[in-house]
Length: 397
Image (cartoon, rainbow, N blue to C red; front, side, top):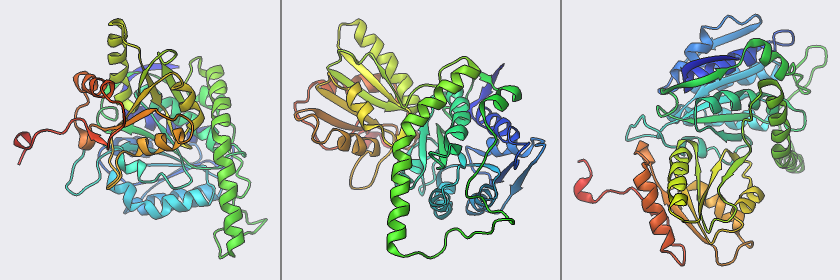
């Protein structure tokens, strides 16, 4: 390993490069790229890498970036790209296509607020808007996780039991542009960890086939059922990839979620990405004060790890979900899935949604303390609570 101090973008770009190079003796690597703040440094790093067998294609839009990546993947290359915010929105159609084609593409997604009004700071609404597409979604809390999950994503996506694309998400600027000590994979380690890609349905002149053509309804149903079955296999394959990763790199990339001090907790907060790091510190402090609080750090959003979340919160009477996103007319997106996970399993559980940090607002320890105080005073859940909403007199005009 090569220990270095790098940004989250650098960590993602490095992992994409060594993963692509690891396929040099097979069909090589390829990437369609288009810049958008705050992910531009990722594609700059990939564009400057000298692949032994690979092609980086600068294009005129995010839609085309994913189109190039799809073409490379369906030809059997190890394919990847990166995007953010409105770039992801512009890529929307081809993100869907990549999933339905069952292509093991990996995308580094830097979470940024969707506009207008225009805002370059972190908000998970951009990737969560893609929640109904057949993509695995992973959320990293720091630079090391960005690097490790990106490498793990390739091995999981390319497993013949899965064959689904994966997006690895990080908080814009908070992770993407912040430097941290990171163990970067050597090429030898990447070669050992990542088998050569063998895409069973790749296009081949010697064996012509068509993909994506017109079908009857029953074929579509069968296709969707195949995707469902692959999604159900994801957690198990993810754990296998974790074990293989630890064997090569000597560290644990973490499970689909991490339950922290939840064994006897009567109050649990559910958080993801960098908010989970802040929440963990608050939990430690309040534990020291004698409070039975815990935290669940969500690393996987799709497929949603329902059973694991229920197990982590088994002792809790109150669960608060911290959402750095907002679905119009409904509330937080993580909360919606958590609510579905507990439906019919925990009568009487207070499951409250807290919307925080939308548009890049700071989620401070004081804010998390306020959430715990509010949650502790509830006997029933209410509508989604905007925990960091300022009074109208304090809002900038």
